[in-house]
Image 1 (cartoon, rainbow, N blue to C red):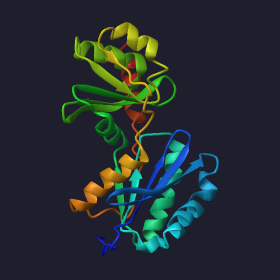
Image 2 (cartoon, rainbow, N blue to C red; image 1 turned 180 degrees about the horizontal axis):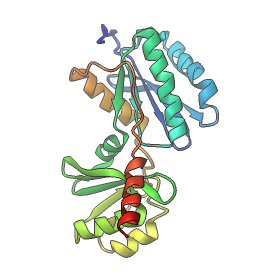
Image 3 (cartoon, rainbow, N blue to C red; image 1 turned 30 degrees about the vertical axis):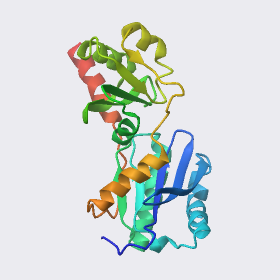
Length: 236
């Protein structure tokens, strides 16, 4: 599904955040223009917003080399809205989709060395998380916040842990109590992966020859947490 590249190498990057939808027109050097839609406006305005971004650069949808999409995890309704929209565009226009792992991209974006823990809101006291040590994501999934903190304390005793994400603040007291002397929380706090990072990760994949897809599914890790809880209840 590889398309002939435009001279300016344009792509569209889109992601669902916890507040709404971010979209950006990008070229290989980086973001050219971006826009934000509140989550309550995403369903009715996303196509219009895409066309507005393209019109600002005298482009049509079919001229895009690819559409980069953060596949999540994230707020499921907004994530499904984004993916349903881009899947329809890909089908109608034969524009390939490049899916981006939001957890891994976020960990890579903020990584400064050592241990990095990404913690995103999975609702109901759960966290979507990724744990990066060195160049490797060593663990990821969805887990109750208290259980994840206990896991970090047990597995990483004495090691500095750089924690980021939109759920760190809620769990700050527990993190400070359990990981005293290890915890590093940046200020300001990166809440989620940036749209710039989503575009950059997708661009790297495209340059490496990833052909793209005709449709993408959401990364939804909540089932991991549900299974874990059921198992714990049964064994108890």
